Image (cartoon, rainbow, N blue to C red):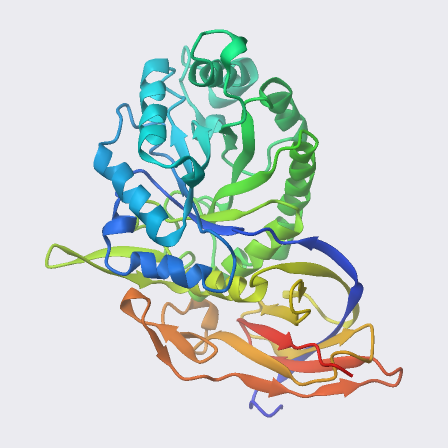
Length: 473
């Protein structure tokens, strides 16, 4: 037993190499994605803009909002001006920047031109990072002559996308007058696309493409999942290996790649999986996984604001819009922002000893203050343990660590929908912060070789942010 009254079932030692910075997590890395349906309510919901300000209060740069999804290719019209007025107001009041979208599936150049014109006429240029053409073309069924989605991709998609890009970017009808580099694509529906397929797309379309975008979900709603299976490591490893290859392919053309739509389970989510504390840990860990590939960001999909996986929930009281309810995944987003701050680099690490299955360590160093931050994630539903973090030096950080815990109450924390706290605090309706500080101090230790370490107890199904300031010695 330990001082917490739980039976320890693992102890793990991870050594962090302060001399091996890997990559810096870009500004504006974390964002949300929202369908066109009800997107104006980002501006109209009382307190929603305060939630955006909260997520950017740690110095992460402008908040990224992608507008699109399944609604992109369903909009056979131009949304009214009040929608764009609302988005402009959010930009003016919070600094948020957008990835917008226009219809591709209909193949109607005049419609898409009108949609793009509405964007350009009503949003400042600095508010729009890129405009996606279409959404998830790998799922287009019957778009041309009743072709299957696979047949359509093989025969037609890349040429169709290029034709639409030319129609939108080249008003004179020739390549002599094109406004290149304003679009995002291919807006692929998953991260398992072959790098050769992305190369094929970019070979033909790189001049028009400002950003490569694709989507990442753990699984579909129709696939059986539980809180524990959501957090399985093997599928993540396979998908992140492929995403890393896609990032490198895109970078070969000088184009950044962003996971512009992501969440736990696609098609609105799965009850008991997407709306529980396991989704909190998945959101936190998944953000770091995507960052480690070299992608420039991730946008967590909110659907139209009332889906099972929605983290910032739109709701009504007496037919009136009420302040948003912040659901479990939101806490993972906040801890990620706290850990990254105004600029951090991931550090190299080595698993030295112990059982690290279902346990993650994400080491970072603040590029401005040199503060060390370690994000620990215990994904096991019922195994507690101790994580020892050792750095490869015995000087500079001889100070106690401050530990901020992300936990859920109950015997089955991964399945919790309430009782969640971050450092002892929780978010009431509208993002009102309640609770009391529950930060802990963990003393630094020296091993026989003089290297500094900290030993952190981790309850089952929990995460922790461990911070150590640089001390002058």
